[in-house]
Amino acid sequence: MKKDQMTIKELFDLHKSMAGEYLEKYTYPWEVLPHIGEIVKELGKNLPEDEYEQKGETIWVHKTVEIPHTATLKGPVILGKNVEVRPGAFIRGNVLVGEGSVVGNSTELKNVIIFDSVQVPHYNYVGDSILGYKSHMGASSLTSNVKSDKTLVKVHGEEGDIETGLKKFGAAVGDYVEVGCGSVLNPGTVVGRHSNIYPLSSVRGCVDKNSIYKREGEIAKKREG
Image 1 (cartoon, rainbow, N blue to C red):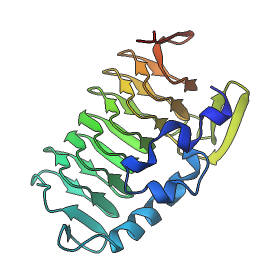
Image 2: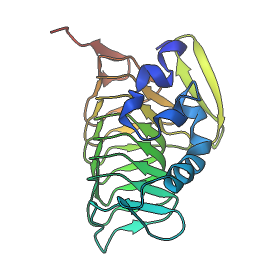
Image 3: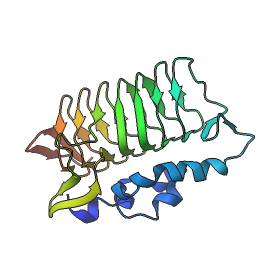
């Protein structure tokens, strides 16, 4: 994947997130990560009071959302219209969950933007990441957001490594991406729109749009039609 294919506008339909106008200010998804908390708080202050209930200083929940008593929310958090939160979910701050999305049982979210109609439904961890419109994390798939040697995360692109300057960066997952069950998206992963990740994959680097990731070194282009 070339650098110009990693841009926010290439990966995401910005009309499918209430944070779209804020995301337009940045070029690459990793540039947004240090500012997610600020974005959530700015959005929260302007949400209509007849639609959203404010729970604590920095938690806003749409009135269509039911929170199970076993779920935990720590602000700043926004849960949009018709979000489904299942038992045992742990939403631990700097999180925006878009309209119609699912946060599953025992799923943990931290410092993420979840676009509309995204599913993280079963035993997922998503941290320091952005998930695009109608993307889906299969059961027990997760983002790994810190390198084992604790050095700063680089994005391994076609034209060479890109320095992010971040110790924590999980993944930027484009619109309509399907991540198979039990897969790990390693630090600095970027997946283009309409791509599929095989189950039990360990993904490093970038996956072009309209691709099928089978294993390291084996990525097929999807057939048209």
